[in-house]
Amino acid sequence: MLLDTASLYFRAYFGVPESVTAPDGTPVNAVRGLLDFIARLVHDHHPQALVACMDEDWRPAWRVELIPSYKAHRVAAEQPAGPDEEVVPDTLAPQVPVIEEVLDALGIARVGAAGYEADDVIGTLTGRAEGPVDIVTGDRDLFQLVDDTRGVRVLYPVKGMGTLAAFDEAALREKYGVDGPGYALLALLRGDPSDGLPGVPGIGEKTAARLIAAHGDLPGILAAAEDPTSGVTPALRRRLAEARPYLAVAPTVVRVAADVPLPPFDAALPAGPRDPERLTELAERWGLGGSLQRVLAALPR
Image 1 (cartoon, rainbow, N blue to C red):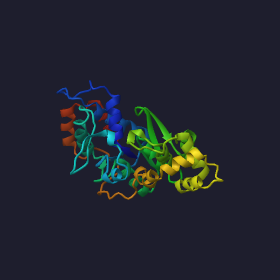
Image 2 (spheres, rainbow, N blue to C red):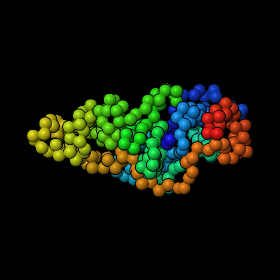
Image 3 (cartoon, one colour):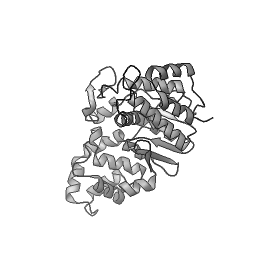
Image 4 (cartoon, rainbow, N blue to C red):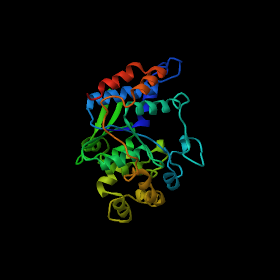
């Protein structure tokens, strides 16, 4: 089981009221919400291995170089010597280091790589996996990894962790008309305002799905756009021709990386906390209470 950790703690932050606080009144709604998510996931799905995948760089320079608008609207401050500072709610930012400390004390693997997003870590670990993989994320970008042959599916929160939509290839085709690899192509054609991807003007989700169904992949779509007998309308031909500079670089930006250099780690789900003393200190300092106990109760015995 691979967690898109930032996606989940953002959901926890907005789903759990800020009235959930530490003894000193500091909000810990994201911390406790994420712990409850993890407890529910482990209890319901019994993963043998669990990795909390992290954004070491939420807006990698190599993606920005290709598409400068990539996540540009989410930049709080540019940092010439490192990752740009992301717009994060004032009461969430201080909770992220606490989340990291708690995961480390529990012994849940926390993995990231300089210059890469959590999506890229997930893509790399999915490619390395020898058995089925459940990817837990609120980010549809990761639908591109769905693969029935390898047993890779996405568990997408619909309402908290109590209601998860499981996306396999059949579910993707039913909702979007494409398979996993087709979703990446659909996303780059359609665009994604939340990531600053412009897409091809005039091509929405349904048109993108029809083009993919008819012509297979991006080279096939572009070839059809140049073939007067293909059935592609003049308006679509013009739009695709005008978008060629974008289409030349967008696949690299949209596709998750599959070859991220990762540090060594142990993905096995621990039977108990790695550092019980530190975990007790954190539980008392931040008032983690029942949320932490539910995680500990869900761990394998």
